[in-house]
Image (cartoon, rainbow, N blue to C red; front, side, top):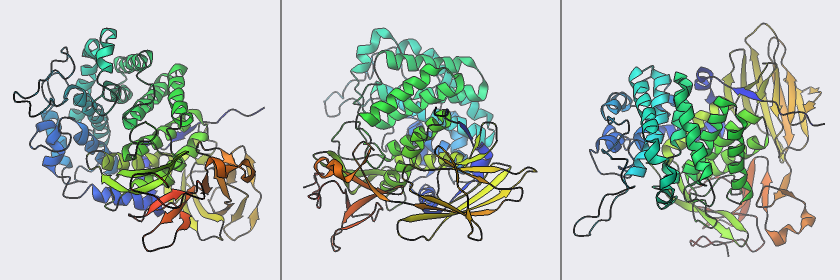
Length: 559
């Protein structure tokens, strides 16, 4: 009989904040944090969606940029209000721009039909959607306020969050009415659609419940989740995967706080619909629009998909979610980061079987993806070390370079040079407690034979249980070498391993080695070569789908 999945606790806020990401993942983090210190992200730009001091991208999405800025700087700044030149300014100005009704942005009569503004008299400008974008901005500043309160102890941030939470309670009859469902549906599912903009507010409501213990906020999130499912606002396809994934994350938070299984079941159905419906690309990420054939990805969606899978694992202990998180982290998220260090949109290539690779970089999204990409890497720090519920051992879900500690155990991992077809890590431990500690390392879905050695190179007995490799550190800590053979193998477009005799050439296939996708790279001056999926800014990458898939056009079709 198969053993029940173990569940693990992530690092607490302090230990996660002290965690250092290193190697290629650490470089990705440092590049985006440096980008957010750039002159583009100045005080007036950041506050414009609240005080309208200038007309910039998505000014009507009040709370979107300003809220995301608060969230990432609260997470990355280690309680230092001077971490960013604009942070103290924003902490002061955000409360001054909150409406009496609780939301941010222009005054709105929420009882009126959605986006009831009229076109200009001469017809030169169509109406600009306001009501739904304000709700989207509210969902993003909501979590920013909570994180700012937790980081800086600023009671004004918590007061703003309460006021915003009460706004969702007071507008329930206008925004979650069975009598207005057709009106909600008429807004569509893209960036200003009801399904995208209203329901992500659940995340902030649950987070507000976490810090206040007031049941009314959790109950409101649960009501919104029920409404979303009852009236099928969670059905695919959908035009905004970022908003959709914010909702899935919210469902998991509701389950985490309530432990009522129905919320987990809802989230699991959404996850399966995405994966089994072909909405997840071989690189592990999602398209900007959840519509097969759409021609680009979005950094926000990759960031959301990573945090959704990490939280799924935390709550269920099922390693399938770690496999997916690792895939997007090492492939889709990396390929989405652009030359500036920011995140945004990359072109997606197709053949007759679906997504076949990536084209050139399309656009950096300073208004959303830069922030969201940075946030997910901060969130990742909670999961580099995890403790089993009874604290019998510490779990390492991913093998990449980092330094972290649980309070009782410090761990440092570093990838070493290894023969072709191998990946090798040095794992150093230090015990900060009286008793010895044990470590379990996840055995990835891509791993072949695993060998374990002590610091002097002596072979050790490998103790395995299901998908975990165990190491006993002793009281003093020690150093270990973990060597994993990484065979090249084939997958279909839905993450199933294939054997060569399965006529993969006729179906299209993907090659993987270790956590990496392998791709044909088309350079203007270089021959076509097969290599790991790495961004060199202008190359066009094609998964090894068919022998004919050796060139691409800017239209996004593989010839």
